[in-house]
Image 1 (cartoon, rainbow, N blue to C red):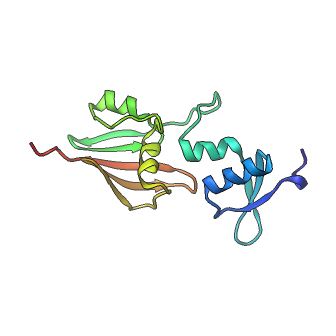
Image 2: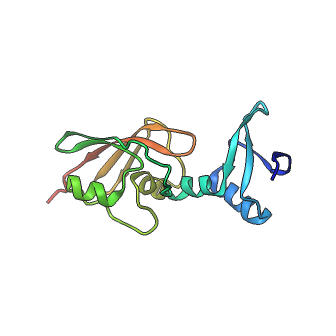
Image 3: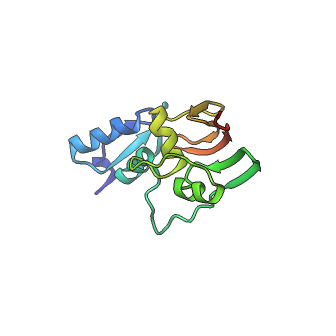
Length: 150
């Protein structure tokens, strides 16, 4: 398929809206343009699904995931670390849910949009400070765990 026939969407369009467009038009690829009309890239259905539902494992993905424990109750994590992995390794008790499997997925599930750097999101006794986001995903978060009051 040549690029001429691809639909064109602005970068500002949100992922779930773009996915609806793909479903309606039967397309699985689009050209994304920036505010000046320059092409900022090509987006595929997989990219959108990854943005909405967290990383789809792909044999080409071997990105370094960052994890660091700062003290008993503070951690810095890549958004793409899997919940069951951090639960097990750091003895955290994030609620697991079939709607997401990564930290970023958990945050997006609760915020329903992509948070901005320095946003603070409280989920139960966990507080996430968003350190780094790209246009499509939560990249890095600082986590504070508050002890439940007994």
